[in-house]
Image (cartoon, rainbow, N blue to C red):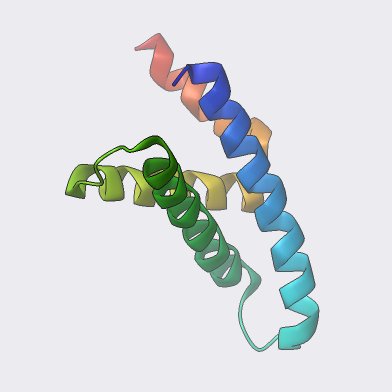
Length: 97
């Protein structure tokens, strides 16, 4: 998978996370912190998308792919909470090293 496709998928997951969190926020009546809700939603969407991708393309699901999906879920949650620009800054900073 190309890096541009991966960034696009992350962007779509961030948008979906924002939409789902906005809808769930109104139904939870502020009983749960929004950042925690965003983290849970991002993890569920990311892991679900990754597992679906593996099943569709016949990729064997091993432990390090699950670990990578969890890390990507944190990235999606971070981008959903603080904006995609901050995430891009961090990714660009790690490329400079």
